[in-house]
Amino acid sequence: MTDETTIPEPNAPTVESKIPADELARLSDDIIGALKTVYDPEIPADIYELGLIYRIDIEDNREVKIDMTLTAPGCPVAGEMPGWVQDAVSTVEGVSNVEVDMVFDPPWTPDRMSEEAKIAVGWY
Image (cartoon, rainbow, N blue to C red; front, side):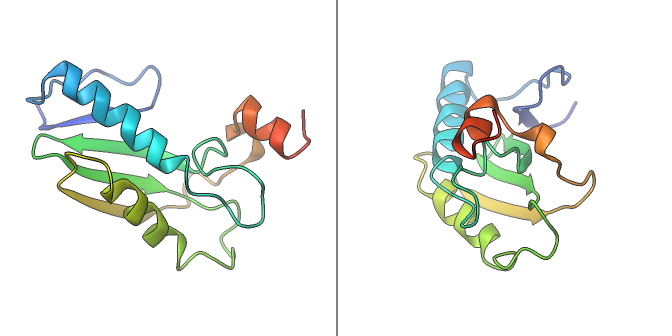
């Protein structure tokens, strides 16, 4: 058994957490809300709806670990965006620390975008 809970991957195996379920649900919602305040400067949609967030782990000590990607590896804000994500999620009440890792496997594709993001960019 691990000491972390993973969101938002659907169909992911459930991992028990020492954080009470109602607090974990609030943290999850608030973290996603914070992620939705970070926008890709070249696309008029937030990074969560664009599908740039691959993994969010909330550990029992309330440390948050995020794996994210970019729409393209050569994105001009590649060096800045992890800091924006860290800053946004750090404002969530109850979060003790935030670690953001940039990953490129699997590569991002527009299929990861939500319907909301597709509408925002005129692809729907």
